[in-house]
Image (cartoon, rainbow, N blue to C red; front, side):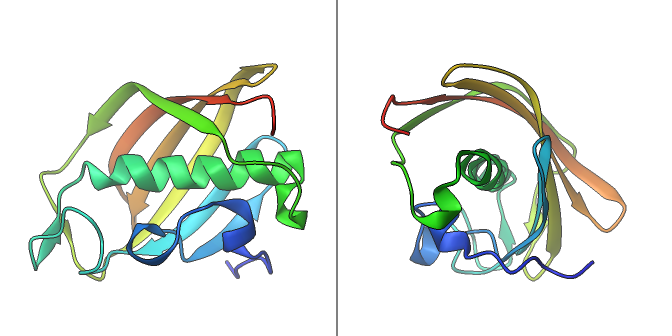
Length: 142
């Protein structure tokens, strides 16, 4: 699936080592799909693998893509004052190899005003690496 011509840096505030998303594959009112390549520059890397806890951040950044796109911040509008919490997380591996391509899908489960609950899954090929539910509260400036 080809990447969409979206500037990720207008959708999420992360830069350098903390920018884990490489491409936006799909985004619409209900979901976002992104692609990432696991790198030795990623947090929680031991030189050969990354700890799967970093997948929480991959899901959160994909959620950021989704929520920002819906709010129109891909056009440089709005702020980025977010508080993110983990509602539930299931991991199905102990470590993720470097250079693994990850496909992350985030779906909006529900939202009320500035509060969203989203569920994300991260795949490596056909293997499900994790399923994570996060809750996002956005400040009134968004």
